[in-house]
Image (cartoon, rainbow, N blue to C red):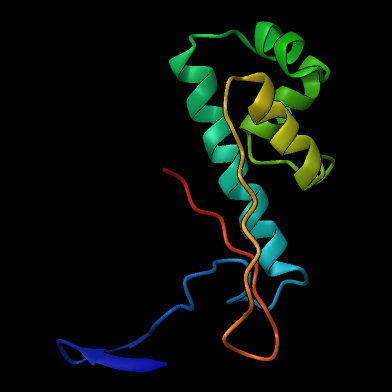
Length: 110
C-alpha cells in the first residue's frame, strides 16, 4: 500500500520483512528470526559466552556464532525452540481456527 507523507510517496510494508521482497517461507523465516532474537536476549541476560551458550543449548559453538550474526538457516524452528527451553524458557503452542481460509504462523512473547 502506498501513501504520501509530507509530499513523499512511501510504500508501507506488510509487517513481515521476509514477505515484502517475496521470499519463500516468509512466515517461517519470521518465526525463526523471532526465536533467534529471544535466544540472543537470553544469552545476554544470562551473561553466557558463546561456548557456554553452545554447551547449554546442545549445539556447536560455530552454530551459536552464526546464529548471533543472523545466519540461522541451518537450524530448524524445532531446534531453536529446544535452545530456548535449554536457556530456561517455556514455549506454549496455541492452535485455533483461522478467520481466513488459509491460516498463519504467529509468534508472541510475554
